[in-house]
Image (cartoon, rainbow, N blue to C red; front, side, top):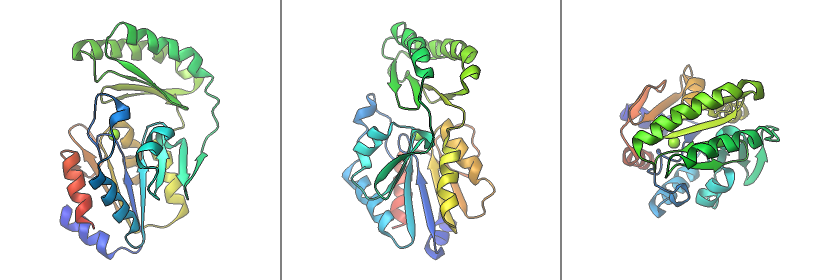
Length: 247
Ligand SMILES: [Mg+2]
């Protein structure tokens, strides 16, 4: 895969690189706010973005303020909150309108579960709520997350919401927001003859699906688990090695 990918990258005229952040460019850490990029990573991203005819986009589920704090000082484009927010030409804009009224009802439901499972916590974003249990006892985290899914599933349809059962995270957000839509938004603006898309979790599958029949796309899943991606890498370190090989 690597040889073909590098060869295609070198000869392409207009290249797009779509990279998830957590679990793809940086390893998961206990406190999400501490998942800072290393200087080496930042320098690789900057070089890639500067290489001729290449557009680098970070595409993440994180709140836009969060990801902006990590990589916002680089002159790159960022899709945040699974496609609800985008930063182009260094300006943030909202791609969808959602007053988030549903959050008032759902927040207490999630909060209840954090109280019965120490270490679990809520990430409160503009367009979604996420229940993280990576720091909780794994049995407790898993069983409480199943119960949470059961409970919020009952109310989700009436608000047009969907639930994503990710890697130690349950996220609820509007149905029409996903990384697939975010990817389409980027694709609509330009024709690319090379696309590299890398991600590690369930929410990245929407991006892989959109690119599935694109003959220019190399889609890569990081880690184990079912995927629509064409290729696989084992971990963050392998992603970094690959990105550096493109330089
Ligand atoms: Mg990820």
